[in-house]
Image 1: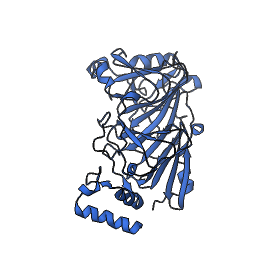
Image 2: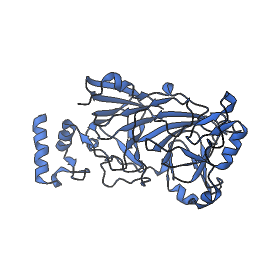
Image 3: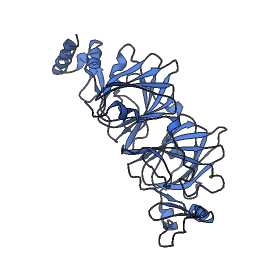
Length: 387
């Protein structure tokens, strides 16, 4: 039984109203076209450079999760990441660009698209849509190392009285902070290093994007999907997730430190009681998710509305149901690069066995009658105990 109680569990829900923007998170925050950027740190500090940044959940997850909120026409300028950066577009039409001068190519992302931009290349993006843009941004690692800004951005920022120290701290002299000495300032990356960075063609970058029409759904991704009332579908976006379909197509699979999968559950349906040994964040893109958690002080029901998230601790029993009449669509983010192994409740295992299914020794859904005799006997014992 986990030590988490109901009070602690409720604090792991982050609704839209709980998210606090920071408009001075980065050194380009006063540059023309970028001054209306808003940065949110939902899980971990991410790469923010501001001491004013509010972080909703500071507990280490193995990754960070934030939001870039930008009005139409607003620009995020060229910078480089040491760890994975994955964009999950919630709202807006976005143009992503990359390369030493941002001129090696562009791709367009729209709501529901997921893009993983490689580490160690300069990238920037802008909202080209007609509405206020909202992107969930996942970053690899608890310590991202910060970012490297293009030298031209550092030069322009200095004209607005903004400087970046070697400790990656943003100093705003317009707010009466003293200008750092030359020895205290971060050193701009040299041109030779910039020239040595890898180049990516538009075709290569497109392969790192999973658009809505690219999603390869499986209706047999979870053991309980064979049961009445438990119909669900999953589609991979990044990494090796928790799908139990041995034929599941995967999205971008190089190491990120996390996986991202889409979970779709129709009204009246649910994913039954299960557990993972890794932390998992559920980000609701459409509909309302109803979670039931088994905690130290009993069961707790939590509703997660659209644009909100819930962080489920490792080794915690949970179930997920679609609340209301709108189909539930969740981005499921799980820590670790490994394929995740699900532990199902005894009730789910027994019911699936009665329907003729179980999981094989590799953790994939399989017809029960094809599994070894010992496995069938173990499952039969669960059925007897349930009956």
